[in-house]
Length: 398
Figure 1 (tube, helix red, strand yellow):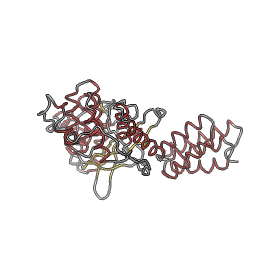
Figure 2 (cartoon, helix red, strand yellow):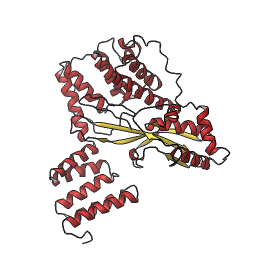
Figure 3 (cartoon, one colour):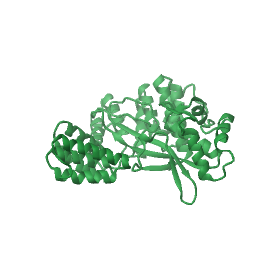
């Protein structure tokens, strides 16, 4: 899973940086005669082609890196489990067992992004690393496998000082005859209800180089960070997380005009990009452009309140504070925006129960159980509510 932080400008290692949010348009208006840092000669193109950070890496070519390259050792490993199997479904099952079986190839999850061969060599990596390895092996076996982006609901757990968006990545295997299978190495970051889409290899490479760029930026390797962010955008110029990251890099290095141009390009790609907005707000605040800072801060607040997962976060806090009426209000708005999220129904059921309305609690709980992804989640909800009823001396069946 990957991360991106906004508002307080802390930068975390990214695998996939952004969740696209469907929100209502803000009513805020750009302040009249607002000055900007951006001059006529600093554009998105300038950031990529004439940045002062390119010194020493102007001619570095990263395009030849093959993140799906198979080594002889990888081929021998795959052949030992799958060799001679003709049926594609059987080959896929054998491959899954080879890399995920209990006593076979013991993969360890960590935060580092690796190529396919590096993942095989180290037996560790993040979800993009594992996906690289599996896709390389699947294609070696002539199994049709694609990268798939999965949008993870936002995490607002940092109390409003920053917000966390995530995207997960996994494998979609096409076995023909309209039969598809998802292969996922980190099931905790995946839910069938999450929005997902097949992406091109170029988009996946953009993720890879953006992640590597963040690694270098955090280590202070500015030139290599810039080279990798630039390569990410060569692979896919619409990959807004890389525009944000290259903007952050320029801001850290004292080039606010270049940072502004990069953040604005991210907003050109997605006008509701909260991370780009928050970074612009902070940039303008630092540069003394108060009106512009307030404009983007207001936009962030407006769009955030229309996000069902932010309402869920507010409801969680309200429950902790014992304000069940407020929790119910936030959750009804959240459910109106997102009707298939079982967590919303469970929390509103809990809120009704704690406020003394057992009938409403039971109705909302039934919906949560209906929407739960599997029997394990359904049983978990049932057990929690049963314990809560018992703690109040009540019978849930009454």
